[in-house]
Length: 217
Image (tube, rainbow, N blue to C red; front, side, top):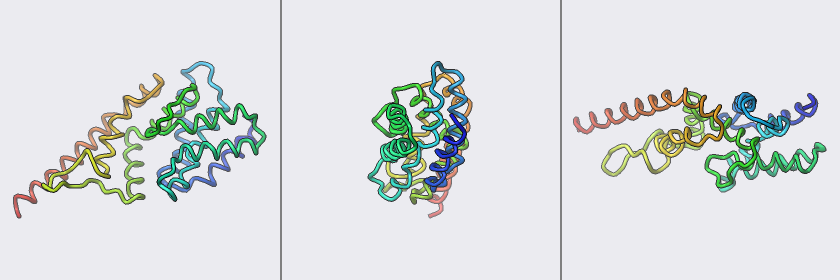
């Protein structure tokens, strides 16, 4: 990709990156991971991949303003329109749109092309390990989501409601089985224990706290 084209795409991304959990550093980590993964795959269109990585979260602001919107779908259309304005061929702009629209873990639009699968994996790698915990907690604070909630019996609830514990059991612990590429699976496997230890340690601490509280009431 020509430097001028890259800089125009990067500038558009930087103008949209307002969310601290999905800021420019997240974008660059995803891009770096994607480039690494691509080395282990065949026939990857690097222009498509790099562009999709840079633009994959540009719909975040729209979703923040209206939680009913899907940032992947909104961002895909934004990316498509922007690339056409930049003089991209429609076929390539559509390819980037497809990559962006299918990168979301919660989405029902699964990635089809190798570029889309690499983007999906690179993005999910940034939810694995210590960085994944930090980003999840940052985002939880942004949307006023608590660390945990308790049931009517006073016990910690880990599998329902909105909380970090529920997010771990819904997404973080299951992310390791969702990768498409062998390289991403390899990287993620080295990070899994960090996440498990943090969750188990946090759960043990708050559970002990509540049990001790019940004994002294």
